[in-house]
Amino acid sequence: METTVQVKNERIEVGADQFIGLFGIREENLPLFKDELGVELFTHGGEIVITGEPEKVDLAKLTFEKLVEILLRGENVDRTRIRYAIELAAEGKADRIGEIMRDVIAITYRGRQVKCKTLGQKQYVEAIRANTCCFAVGPAGTGKTYLAIAMAVVAMKNKEIEKIILTRPAVEAGEKLGFLPGDLAQKVDPYLRPLYDALHEMLGVDAYQRLVERGAIEVAPLAYMRGRTLNDAFIILDEAQNTTSEQMKMFLTRMGMGSKMVITGDVTQIDLPLGKKSGLVEALEVLRNVDDIGIVRLTHRDVVRHELVQAIVRAYEKYAAKAGERRGARP
Image 1 (cartoon, rainbow, N blue to C red):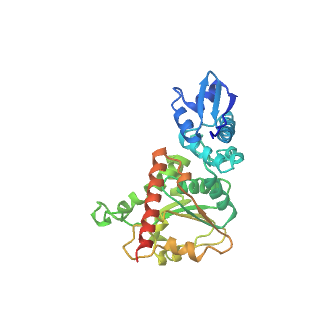
Image 2: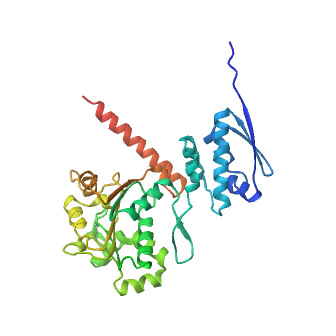
Image 3: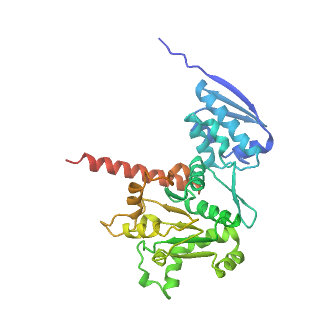
């Protein structure tokens, strides 16, 4: 007995600008939509014809409609956002696609709007707002540091805090500090460079320098935090996976009145000596039930760099999971 496969057709009309925004000038995104949605697509002018299994056609139509809403707001939709929107729709969260890039978090000195590009980033920003201390754990490219700095700059402009303090542990990833030229300040500068870059983008180099000169911004290695109490400050600890337990406890107890802390890191990129437990890993265990401390875990889905970065992160996650299964299977 033959099984009849149902086929459904749907038509969507979109404007010329939205059509280009979805598919690209040469329709280079068309194969991506076909592969990810599992439907046939035929385009002509501003018309999109969707053909396939009814459920998949309905999902595709809903995804297109939500992406068009984003385009009509004046936002761009790249290949990473397309994949993310399709994933959300497949999970029954299509109504949340419209939340992507909706709220302006900050505006850079060049006038560029900083927005959350994923629901994970939105959760992260909300956790910073709602808690005095917030941990953000996730892979490279998820905006952990950049969004924290954006929030810190906004807090300073709103006069909610008086000072921004950014710090990192100076732990080498294969290169020894002693082999680098210059004095201590010059030696640690490469470790702090990503923090400088983000501040320069948010404030501009001139404004940044003025704030540094008057002591309103401080960028320093973690060792410089010992013995201090930090009041009325927005304090960001970056690359926290490379702190020891002692360093993490020291940092967390620097919290003063009127201050906010954000701790970011990637527990898959620990550069500590073998056998040394990461202070970040320990802190996530110790503090998970403490009030006024938020913990946000970002994933490959929240990567907002080149789409290949997302694929690389996902491949490493799968490899690590399989390696863990193999270790667990050994007698």
